[in-house]
Amino acid sequence: MSRPYTLHLPALLSAFILGGVLTGCGADDTGLTLTDMGTPPPDLTPGVPQIKHVVLIVQENHTFDSYYGRYCTAPAGSNPTCTTGPACCERAPDAEPSGALPITLDDAANGRNDPDHTQACELAEDNGGKMDRYVLGVPGCSHDYNWGIAPDSVVKTYLDYAAQYALADRYFQPIAGQSSSNDMYFATARFVFKDNDLIPNAIGHGCWYQFRTTTRLTGRKTIADLLLQAGKSFGVYAEGYQAMKDALLCPTSFPSDCTSSIKVPGAPNTCVYDPSDYGWQYFAQFADNPLYIKDLTTFTKDLSTGALPTFSYVKGVSYHTEHPNFGNTITLGASFVKKITDAIMNTPYAEDTLVLVTWDEGGGFFDHISIPGISPIDNQPYGTRVPLLALGKFAKKNYVSHVQMEHSSVVKFLEYYFLGQQTGQLEARDTVVNNIGSMLDPTQTGIVVPEN
Image 1 (tube, helix red, strand yellow):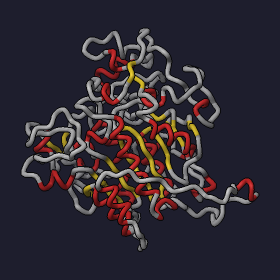
Image 2 (cartoon, rainbow, N blue to C red):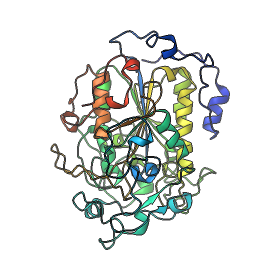
Image 3 (cartoon, rainbow, N blue to C red):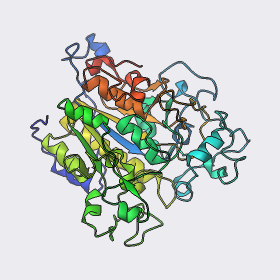
Image 4 (cartoon, rainbow, N blue to C red):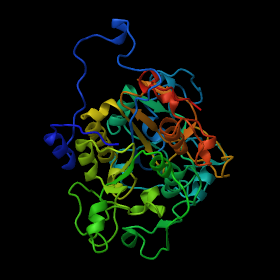
């Protein structure tokens, strides 16, 4: 249910909508800590859930090593068991198994090339978990630009989040291959199709996929269905959705900060909304349903009026997701995530909202940690590691989780926390994957979320 917040935030909301950078909440100026006072966290009733809202922000196509390969300082292969700070996660190796050195994955390099990240290429490059054919060995797939590490200055926002909150270093894309197949696991924790093989019958498909058959899945439940049946709420906030709705076929004007190298009026490009990036657009009960599928600008309105759903799925258009190629920059993507996060942290929602940030898949980039293999539930092969961040008061601080997780772990957490601690309700990977409890502070969450 929504809550009637009274906020005085016109400048904050305007800054968000116009693309301004919002600042985080200031620190307590008393100089006292809980340790100094010798008391447990105040106003926490044991057994009473304190998280009321979860916001999931999904970026695209980078591995853990791509961003955290030089933040982490433990030697590659050392498998540290400690959990505090960068000394407790593995540094990317100096060279990929073929002997190649990483390229500098700065904004220019990110905007130049898009590694092949089809399932066929990724499995060939993973080579049964050896992770040794990303640069050499697979014609048409291997390439030197598949192995890159972003400079600290480019990913500073994400490094700062890791130092302040919780980072998972064993979080994997649930299926080898492209974005849409992986996005389905956020919605339904199961295999639906491979790569980007299916296109949703939803607004925007005519702009992006004029000659592709579209589909609308019926008779299938998602985590959103379960939440709604339990009296909870759900919303997708999609950047560019309203502009696509208003267009005859494709938008003909684009945001001023979009640096896409493909910007042709009336043609799809990284400046406009793509329905295949949103798993719920594939399901008949949610496709273009205005109760649940909304433009991103509605997010700030819902923050200001106390209407934030129990579970929110937030995503930008391609140039805000860091997707490689087309002139897309990492900097713009990180700035987008910071604006969303700051918008939450500057409202009363900071007190009861958990923010999760992850990447839908590794994008064909090299990562040195072996993939887990095949899921026993749907017999589909896992893909590479991607980062997962837990942000806000409920996240452990400067923490590194080594628990193996994937997108279905988010589903399992939502079931546990909001649906009577009963997991596996979708009867898919939510029955076997680990939960995200290792990243959460039990003194803040009210109920202890398990690691498994």
